[in-house]
Length: 242
Image (cartoon, rainbow, N blue to C red; front, side):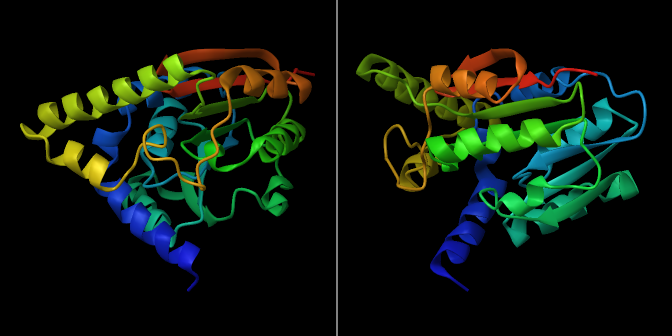
């Protein structure tokens, strides 16, 4: 096993335990993502890129009873937990191991109705994001949507300081509400989770304004940002219909 694979599995276990505290308004974000997918009135697939333990996939399966969700992740730990947690959905949920930068998964026999991603795209550099947006646009069926929930890089020092402070406050408040103490908040800092406070070469968030331009250049319409807090944003667009 490579060092990167070892880190990925360790990181996966930590996020499974602490994600509800580390992600600002996680439940709200999942509801927003689901609300931005056009109605699905016939059997169709949704791809959940870097699905983690399957929380967003579960939200989508409940929101779109005719849809099948493919939960895709590099981490075998995450895929195993997702398969177990979402087993009640039967054949409507399946897992697929993949690596986000690898373009081979972007060619599929059936064009998906939507592609979603949470806390993954920021691991790609600017060129990788532009390539992903172009490939997903080509992959989607007409009228399909790309919806991304992710970290975005503030463009100035004041914005960076605000994102850092608001993220800290969100984690502390969610820790107190969920546990009555600050244990998850202390782990947030011990694990150096915030890229706004502890920069890491694996984190490459791009400014939101640039990503909206790249989405438009890839061919997406109705490109917009729909929610934002503490350096986290939900944004995307739709492919023109036939």
